Image (cartoon, rainbow, N blue to C red; front, side):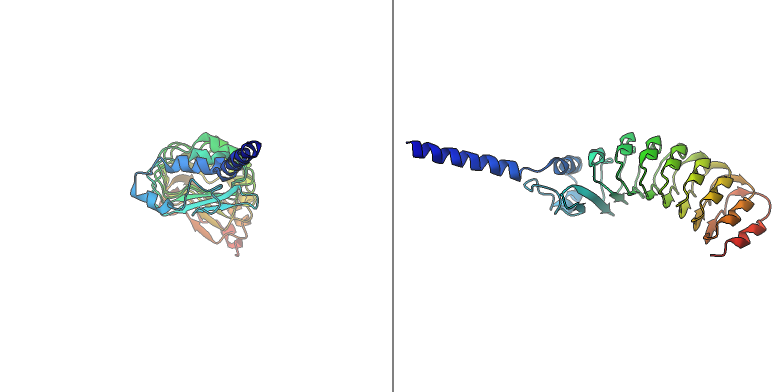
Length: 263
């Protein structure tokens, strides 16, 4: 009888251990929660590898993980996603790359995305996102690429974006943004690409502080309401190769200093 009791105890212990080790971790559960918001659509078929029986989501399509099995990258592009932005993933402490592009995402960008402090790449381009660009973007201190183009975003470009001092690529074109280009853009000394064209509500002059962005190679401000002259200080941008300012309201002459942009 004691032997039978020991056997039953060991079997119970084995079951408990199996349950513990096979249970999907919190990051996987969060991803499945987001999937459930469009699981009845035909797009769910693209996520057949998202198996709730797995221990982690590290082998799922569109997901990459660190060596310690924390989600570090989510890349989902050109798949119809009839849902909203997955706010659940903003709690992933090791998330560095978040690409959800060309997927018809709706709703607003949550202000909590400022908590994703490890983000290096954030690409939400070519969706149907609305609302403003949250000021909390300024908390993303290691961000290198911010692509929010081709949405329905409104409001002004937040001045807090100047705190993203490692930013190299800033793409905001083809939205419904308004207001002036913040002078804090000049704090982005690593910036190589700045595109804000296709926002007719952007007005005011091109800030002279852009001349501090000495690595800038692409400046796109076409189809905006910007006014005034082209600043001669842009001649300090030795790496500048492309300037799109057509269909704007610029006045004056093309400054001779642009000849210094010899790249």
